[in-house]
View 1 (cartoon, rainbow, N blue to C red):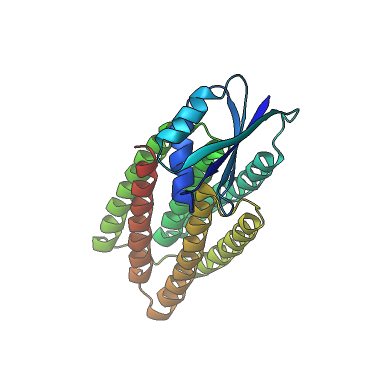
View 2 (cartoon, one colour):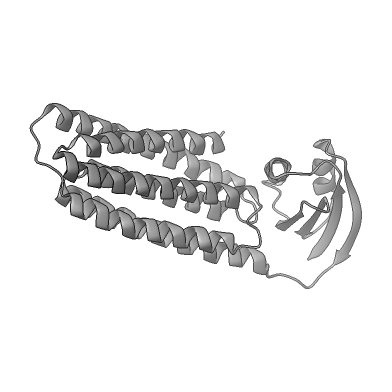
Length: 264
């Protein structure tokens, strides 16, 4: 294994990092990419010659210049493993709450909980995509992004149709207490996810930042479902639940388009 350090003078934010990852994706000799954005350094762990990698870095016109190449015994990359553990943790939490909220949403007849469950599923997709992003392999990331994006859009459209059916139909009031209790637990779960992501030493990397943004938005959605539950009880109307469900389905579609952008 060789370790080559590049100085990249125009690398000053995560967008340049993503650009470099995309450019170097597919070079089979690369084992790991270690970005140091504040110091504008890129360390490439690779086997074989550096020529193809150096040529690709220079072609980006980001002021890339090779500083040194040396042999290394390092074959395990701890930070990547730490990132994966964090992302697996939040993925598991979100997928578990997708099942919980979908189940309780159907039983309690709450479209707010059903919509929020799909948002949790959407986040699971985001964390899954981020897992593929750790250390490279953008091709796999793009494939799963496309599948995840279209799947989310289909689910959200089905949700919109159900909201319309309930809006014009004669449906029983959703169970407001279930809405509030489950959403409070989901709020706690999202708070835990945000804390876990904040612990990452690589939280400034683009895919980790995206994960934190999605989780922060979820906290706002949870508060919205709790408020809808209170209004359902206070107004004796299912309209607040249908309104929050519609808003969350719209957010799910918006998130789907963001994910689809990753597949281009």
